[in-house]
Length: 108
Image 1 (cartoon, rainbow, N blue to C red):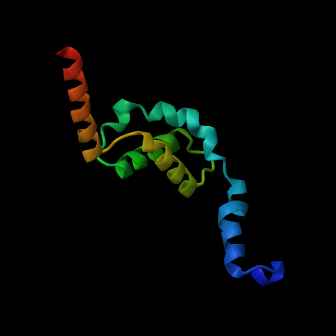
Image 2: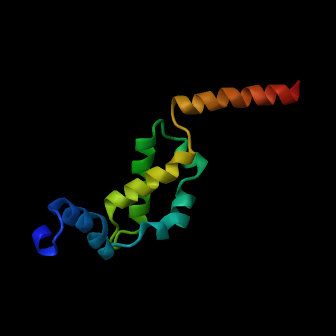
């Protein structure tokens, strides 16, 4: 295929995987309002690590949209990007200690 299009095989493969094949799926950005509803602090804070939260969010969205064609890799990447605003594991503990210090300063 690359020879036919006069490009390298890797360029043809990348185009197929990154552009052409995705036209048959719904754009995951259309689900952002629903993902924001799913990704509340209460829901996400129940997970110790980002990967577990990511899988749970993806599963919750897919449960609501069983009949729709969603590109899984793109959805997982997009959810991972949206989850960057949350803290997990040790990051969360660090933030809590800083929050306690701020509260103590205001109280005293």
